[in-house]
Image (tube, rainbow, N blue to C red; front, side, top):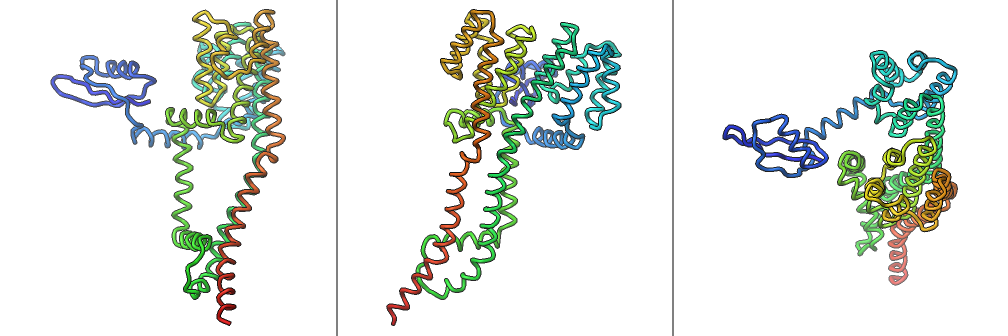
Length: 416
């Protein structure tokens, strides 16, 4: 969020824009920069153009550096687990991984982490600058390894968690590949037919000197738009997609409204995929962290970091606060409205029996079962949409081309 703050200093007004989570933080930043100034007015404002350009340049620079692939990250974490279990020091382990890593970015990161540890920092402190790349769970398990002195077990469990999340993401992308390819091919074929076939009938339609049916008018309008403004339409399409993705990634308010719309309106298939995947990742990480001995409050905070949907995340973030007010974990979960009664009963039983980690694991399995069902049957769920889309294109082409011909045939018969 950005705030425009009007300051008064030595009789002169000045306006500054600050990025902050709330007004109080923005004012604190202003007072730190201008300690003798008086804050006159504070108001929320849209993201300034300079910040947008800076973000684009930052993303471009980050992408040019190379990303840390999930496979490389998991392999490195597995290696840390094995080598520390063999009694090799953490710095020697990191140096070895950096020396043998085929990923330039990962090599750079581990060299810097090893250097910082040798300079006196802890493992978690050295990894803090790369928290966004490694993720909340990695940071939590690193803290656990430090507290217990057992990096091997902590990183072994971390690798299992990341592999689970990666496998589900991979399955979902693979399941989407076929319908996306099919719909894209149909879209390209339709545009090609409009641009190449319709012009051949255009002269015939013009010679009829009669009112053309609506499907034909639509085809002719599309043909004109594609042939005269094709590149512009393509640029607008990609520009619109990029703008949407940029806003979704960088504007918290825009992202929240989209996320809320998808979940509340139960958008066909998409809402279930997002919900079950988010809840599975959340409960999986929470259960594993509790089992590993991390306090519940810290485990809850870390597990929430796995949720990317801001609407679901907002609801789950209230759990820790409600527990702090004296509610049980079950009662706090019930207030979110995200858990079914059966699942709440299981969590309640886990709390009462001291087997919370095991019962949360069962809840995680339940969400995973639903998510896997969607993935395995994704083609079946999407086929009706594909068939409707394909049928609509074929019907438009058929009616648009043949309806004027039928009219011409009728006119010839009447004349005879």
